[in-house]
Length: 288
Image (tube, rainbow, N blue to C red; front, side, top):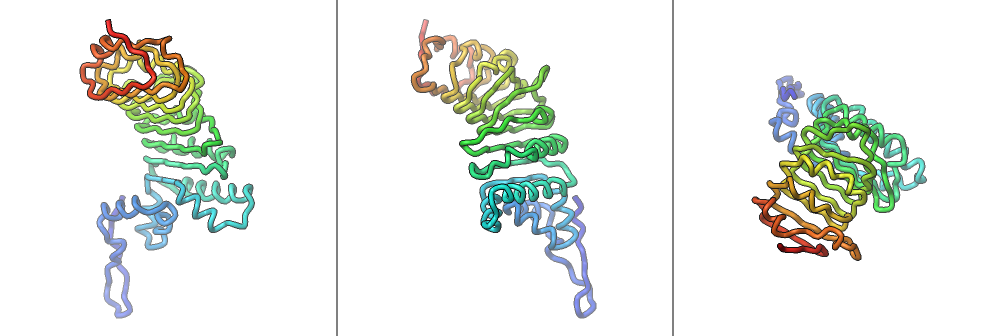
């Protein structure tokens, strides 16, 4: 991005430096990063330089601050029109972005089900075409969102975090090339799912269908952190290829019969030569 300083004429006729536009590039980036997205967008009126910078801003975060401000300024609208207002603003920001979108975070409130509109699928399509690397979606606790197939074309993705969603990868999906960190909470995995052999951290909380992750553990050679909390039974064979694992945390569902899959502690430790931390709760262990 160009950081060329602008000048303007003062009333006395001498050239004066536009100090706002002349700030160092790193300073401007830090300012934008620390502002709520509403305020970051508003910087585009400061000068052409700031307008150009906002048009190329790569980090889009639509969090509870974003939604609460819209609701506060449109408290007379009914739910249907409020959803139209919110989706229109997000559409405008995404369409106005002329550069890569490296980070996209969206937290959908329970009482504002924008995920039920077609806009959500189009936003995922938009960011998948713009090199997204960090994707975080939090859908309200009483909601559910079926991730569109566009998610699986995000070839640059490195960090993925999903809450209250469902995953159904397309046929022949071979995993991601760059994905290193996955966090899933209240996610339904409905079919064979592979995150790729670069994965280093995998955290599963209250998920169902984790048996569809079997292929991930047949080829995994880089997993360092593995947390699985109240997400179904574990196949002990998953740990045969996790030789680089350093942190393991297993918390079974209440009432789950983990005796169906005893974990051989001695064999487990033999396979994890770099293990530092192990946490078991509700699992059945045996030692030869």
